Image 1 (cartoon, rainbow, N blue to C red):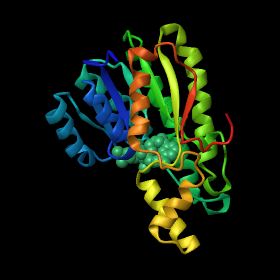
Image 2: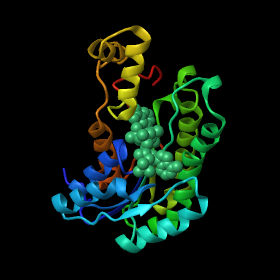
Image 3: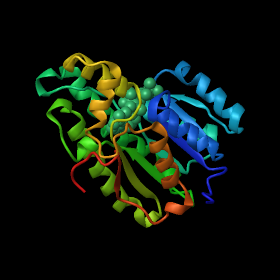
Image 4: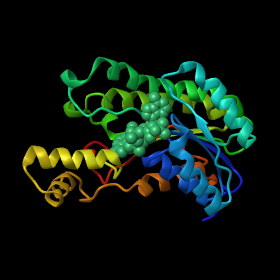
Amino acid sequence: MELNLRGRKAFVTGASRGIGAAIARGLAEEGVDVALFTRNPSDCEALSRDLGNLHGVKAPIIQLDFLERARIKPAVAEGIAALGGLDILVNNAAGFFRGGLMDIPEDVLEENFMIKPIGLMRMTRECASHLEKSDQARIINLSGTRGREPSPYSMLSGPINMGTNSVTKAMANLFGPKSITVNAICPGSTDTDRWDDLVERTMRDHGLNQKNAEQKLCEEVPLRCVIRMTDISDLAIFLASSRASRITGTAINVDGGRTRSI
Ligand SMILES: NC(=O)c1ccc[n+]([C@@H]2O[C@H](COP(=O)([O-])OP(=O)(O)OC[C@H]3O[C@@H](n4cnc5c(N)ncnc54)[C@H](OP(=O)(O)O)[C@@H]3O)[C@@H](O)[C@H]2O)c1
């Protein structure tokens, strides 16, 4: 399938690890130049080198912490200067806290919202005029299934991802007339650092070994599996491609069927 991605230009936030790094790799494989946004540039050096060496694309590293609001404008300007334009914005960065209402530290409560969805909105505002110049403009927001199926054990993930789904829909309406598509991807439990943490917690709470803890977690999933980072990046690449030009304003689960609603 021809995806028409070669030579396109993308920004990926939270690019140093996990799903952000996987999406950056997937886009680079398709010949996309990718600006890697991260709080600590040294964390992206190896990835940037790899993308250049393996795929011959530009992979500049741009420092950005969403808790420093004034940094967003110059960071976007640096990314545009490095790539010479923008076709694809991947809003992937997020904070994370697994725990109930009473457990969330006060600073974490506010800071996580500053990254997603507030930082995501600020980033999109700053990038909009550049995306408008592209003939294949895409905004892809990383959300999460807890936005649709809240859990008392992951209290923050609900409002943060429901908010992300909501702004995704509203931005799709706003930018549709300019032919910019806006979609969200909702990962289920994915094999990032978060999965390792969840497995350890399940081992501790239920007195299980690693294999049995993983099996217990997978039993909650109809497909009986953990989501791979490439499951998420494959969808992001499709949404970025010319093949997805009529898909906008939607939030797609990649969760092995775990979410109980449709
Ligand atoms: N993993 C899962 O199971 C899962 C499930 C549901 C939804 N999701 C969503 O999928 C996306 C990726 O998740 P993930 O598990 O790969 O990563 P993650 O560990 O949740 O973190 C994503 C990235 O966010 C960046 N970040 C954190 N605080 C930041 C800040 N103050 N300013 C700027 N960037 C900041 C970090 O990048 P740097 O270190 O490079 O700065 C980090 O690598 C997130 O939006 C997450 O909510 C993941």
